[in-house]
Amino acid sequence: MANVSGLAKIVRDYMWEGYDKAGSAFVPAVNKVAADVAVIRGFPAHAGSVRKALNRLVKDNYLVYDPAARPAGYRWNAVAGKPSGYQPTAQVAAIAKQKGTAKVPEARGRLRGMLKDHLDEVTGIRVLSEQVQDVPDARKPRKTVKRASGETYVMRDLYGRPDVEALQQLRDENIFALLYGPPGTGKTALVEAAFPGLHTIAGDENTSTDNFAGQWYPTDVQGKWFWVDGPMTKAMKNGEVLFVDDITLIDSLVLAVMYPAMDGRGEIILKDHIVRDADGNLGPERVKIQPGFYVIGAHNPGARGAYLPEALASRFRTHIRVESDLELAASLGVPQNMRKLVKALLVDRDNGDLELWIPQLREMLTFRDISQQWGETAAAANLLGLAPAGPDRDKVNEKLRVIFRKDIPLLELGGQLGDHS
Image 1: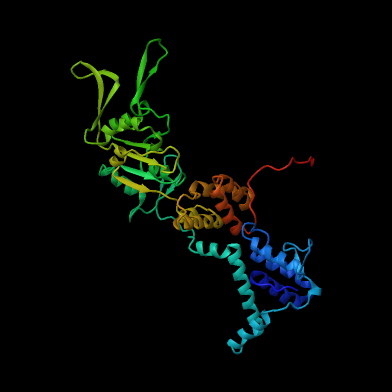
Image 2 (image 1 turned 135 degrees about the vertical axis):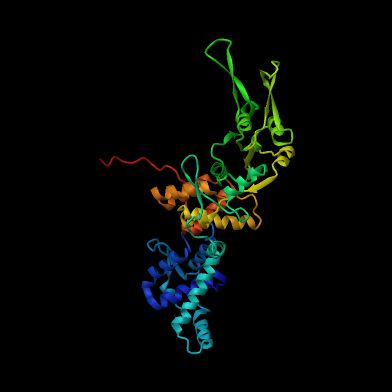
């Protein structure tokens, strides 16, 4: 028989060792080892070299492919006999000699560990283990606050102080804040927790100056109209908080309506709202800022069409990045496998894959909810569908295979069900 080397030799010698010890009973034993380290099934993206090694051994008549042997599908060819150049026996003796009184079973255990270590490297288990070794566990939140919706917001640290209190302090000092980060990280939840009763504008490419300042609406009487103040005007008049979400999706010419309210001018002029002043003269309404007025914005820098004008960026004197917190996710019941995936992807991003898609708290909570109904595999399949098609989805799929030790298909409908009535 031909000489083999590398991974094929390791697999060959390991299978012979088991066969020589257990004879025909070795087939299920091999299958168990294969299942434990996911040699064949569960790692299609990583198992190419392992499958190639097994195919090489089949070709050289060391192994026999057996469809009945699950999941490995391979067994030792009894007629092959002891393989040429068999190494484990010599290695066992060497290890036993180094350990002095070491027992041979202990040395054999070390050899099995060597094989598993090699296969972990092939399948990606080792890399993932290194990436997720610091995944935080849940702990009871120290500080929470109720949002207007009734939901509980768990406060997070912002340079030594609770984030909610930090934003409230910025308001007291009239320092406008801009929150930025991926969607689903809790930016809106933070603002709502910090400022109950705020005035909100959800920005997009169709947002107009009327959505900020106000506009005329028709009445039931023909030719009669009435004026309605916009969120910015109301916040200015009442000394309240204006929140502009997805602010970088709004046209920069429209955003200019905010500038007088955010600099030293202290007032805006509503050109479309003609009123009488104290002297009875007609003219555009002048709205002066009342104490307590505050502007806070939020945006996703990676959103398509997002643009942050320098004139606007400079008026927000504090820029705060918001990302999902794995410890918070754990305290909210997000399963450990989901947290492992996010941690592994974060490590890849920190190592240079800067544009990599990473599930945020919104996706993690969705994973939790689907897991509770259909199980974690279905939740993983749904998550795979949420990932952007292309390299990002491939990366997520690769991590999921290692975490779940099996291939995760997309969540999709199957064939029609029969009538079981």
